[in-house]
Length: 594
Image 1 (cartoon, helix red, strand yellow):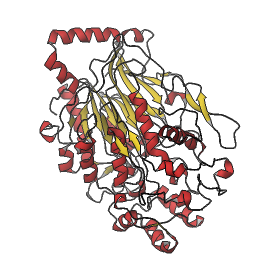
Image 2 (cartoon, helix red, strand yellow; image 1 turned 45 degrees about the vertical axis):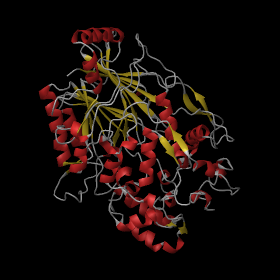
Image 3 (tube, one colour; image 1 turned 90 degrees about the horizontal axis):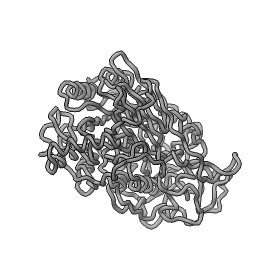
Image 4 (tube, one colour; image 1 turned 180 degrees about the vertical axis):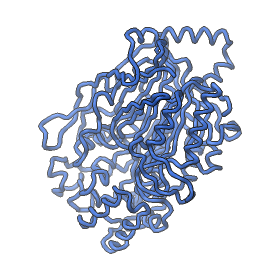
C-alpha cells in the first residue's frame, strides 16, 4: 500500500513549517482537539491504492472550520440532551414530544477505564455514521406491500416521507458544531448501506442529491399525482387523505387531507457540509433487497404499468417464509406469483426511472461530478473499482487512522451477507500492510451487515468457484490484527454494541439503528487516545433536526420530517426494542492500545 497522507495533512504541509506543526500538535494534545483538521482523504482502491490521483480522487478543501480552542464537550442537538418519546396512553396512536436524555455509559468489557484519562486524552478522529436510510419509491411496482400481514418491513406508513426525513438528518449534521464528546471537528459522514430500497435508478438519484445537495421530487410514474397502495381503497393500508376506515385508522392514525400530494412534492437538500463516503447494502444491490439481480422479468415489472397490491394471506405467508430462510435466492416463487396474479394487478403509469441499477451504474453515479458535494470524488469509490468490478476500498481518515469499506452483499441472493474469497484476502492484505509499513496506527472497518447477519453463503453467479465467508470468519480475521479498533455497521435496524476479544487483539462492533424505523437515528463516533495505554471510542446518537412535536396541519418539508418520525413510532408491527439497551446507545468504549 502506498503511503498516502490525508488531505488535511497535505494542506498543512503546504502552509505550515515542521516546527509549527509540532507546536500545533502540542497545543491540540493539551486542549483535546483532533490532531488533524476536518477534511476528506484519498480513497485507496482494492488493488493497493497506486495511481489514485490519476483516477480522479483529488484532494478536497476543508469543508468546515475547526472550532476555536479550547474545545469542550456538548449535548445540544444529541440524544444526550433529549430523545423523542411518546405522550398519552398506550394502545392507540401516540403523539411524540421531548423525552428524557440517554446518558453516556462507560463500557470496560475490553479494558479498564482509568480515573484521570479525561485530563490527558487527545482526539484522533471523529465522524458520523448514517445507515439504512432506505430512500424508497413507494409507488414502485416491485414493492411487496402485499406482504404487510407477514412482516412490518414490507410496507411502513411513514415511508412515503423518507426523503424529507433524510434531508432533516443532513440538516442536523450540518448544524453540529463538532463532535459531542470532545468538541473536535468532524471529519466526514459514512453511510453504511441500504441507501436505497428497491435498487432503482430514481432512488439512487434521490440518495445522491440528498447527500450532496439538490432538489428531489420523490415521485415516479404520473408526475401529477400519487399512484400506490395508499389510495388503493384497500383497508390493509393507511389512507391519509381519504375517509376510509382502514386498519391503521382503526388504531388511531389520523386523516391528513393533502398528505399524499405533499409527500411527492419537491424537497430541497442543502447537502452535507462534510465530505461523505458510501458503503453498499443488500437493498442497493438486489431487487427487493433479497433476490439475485439480473432477472429480466423483474426489470420489466419495475418499469411497467402494473402493480400487485394485495395477495391471499396464505400465499403471502408461504412466500415470506421462503424469503426468511433464503430458500429462493433467485426469486422464482415471487416471479411465479406475479405472473399468476397478473390479472389482479392494478394499472400504474410506467416509468423507465424505476429500472434496477447495476453495480457499474452505482459506481458511475457516485463518480459523477454532479454528485460530488463536499467530496471526495466517488465518495470512496474509484476508477479502479470501476475497472475491477469491485465495491470495496480503503481510505485515509487521518494520518493515524485508516478506514476500510467492505461490500458484504451476496450477489447470489438473500438479504443476509458474506464476503467472497478475493475480498477477504484483500482485507487481510490491507490490514497486514498497514501494520508492517507503519502507514497508519489504527483501522476502522465499515460494512452494511453485522457479524451475526453474515450467514449467507450462496454462490456468486459471477464467480461460481469462489468460496463465500461468513461473519464469524470475518470477525476472527479482524481479531488477528491489533490495528483494528472497530467494525461499524447497520442492517439490523437496531442499536447494538458487541465486544470482540481474541488472543491477538480486541475490537468493538458498533451496529446502529436505521433511519427508516423508529428510533430514527444516526451515530457520531469519536476516537481518542487516553495517553494511559488505552483508547476510547465515544458513540453518540443523534436524531434528525425535525421537532419532536408534530402538527397535523403542517405539511411543509420540516413538518413532513417530523411526521416521518412519529408515524414510524406508531407503525403497526414495529419492534419496540430497536433502540437497544443503554450500553448500546451513548457510550465510551475503552480499548487497550495494541
